[in-house]
Length: 75
Image 1 (cartoon, rainbow, N blue to C red):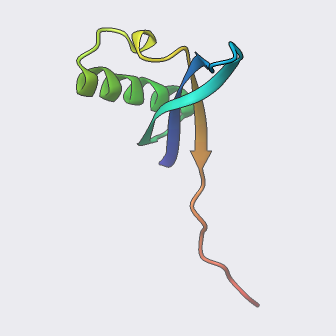
Image 2 (image 1 turned 90 degrees about the horizontal axis):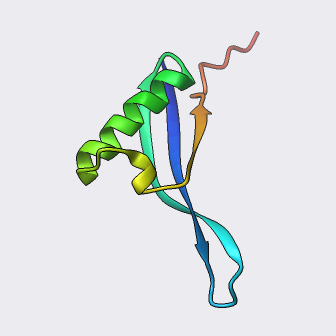
């Protein structure tokens, strides 16, 4: 399984009125695919924040795969 980081992004305005993407939360999950990682992370966020839909909390998600370094062979 692969370790994925799912980032929840919200657009916020600064005091000059310019929008910026802000990371609201990061959820790490192990899953066989990015699609499954997103499904698991959404369920965790909704459960922990008592939400029926993650879009109440954020505008977008980013899914990033973290590939652990394997054993290095020399020879």
